[in-house]
Image (cartoon, rainbow, N blue to C red; front, side, top):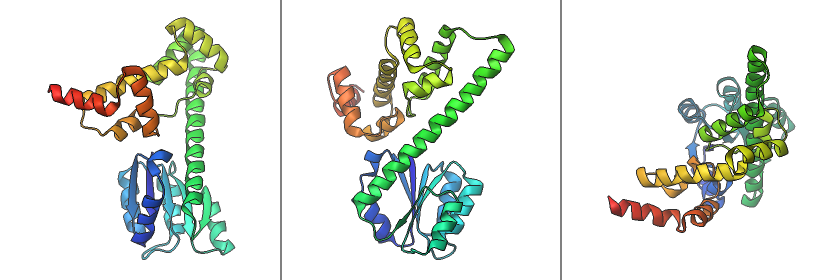
Length: 258
């Protein structure tokens, strides 16, 4: 995920970056802006998942920035971080669909919890959107050529996994895309591929990780993000379990061969 922190006080931005383990929360890239204009420039160039905005800024306010986001970057979720406790500000922010309105000063552990809730919300919305899109495609195909077999549905799930390894993949959401229950998909998937959906996802992710470590200049953290891991330690643990060495050691050995 990509996070944008907008505050006209550099010390406030630096404090968030130092005080919260943003990578652990799932943010692979963190952008910063000190004004409305700088924030719009970032949002115009990057697909930002979450923006944390201050209210007071030198050119235009955080409320105005949220209005711009609503119109021009609707997939970007927002959190307001402000010293203003007036209801009018909170009301405006809520009307612009911000996830939370947090008052400064706030302890880093509290803000970390707020960000963690935001990440969960974003992932849930994405899964719901994917289920709706795939569900509609499935219905359209049924209308064109009749109901598909369970085998075809399983193949569609496998193809989706293969092409979306960087996303938060859950068996329940994948099953919903093809109108099967999670249990039924698991049984049919294992019958078709000889492994569970979760095992298939992990295998494909580890295959891609090995290839990226071998042939790219990406850091270990960046590789973890590319294959859907928000935790560096969990990625390292899974990689070592399968390949018998850490990603760092594997990468070093591969580079020494060149």
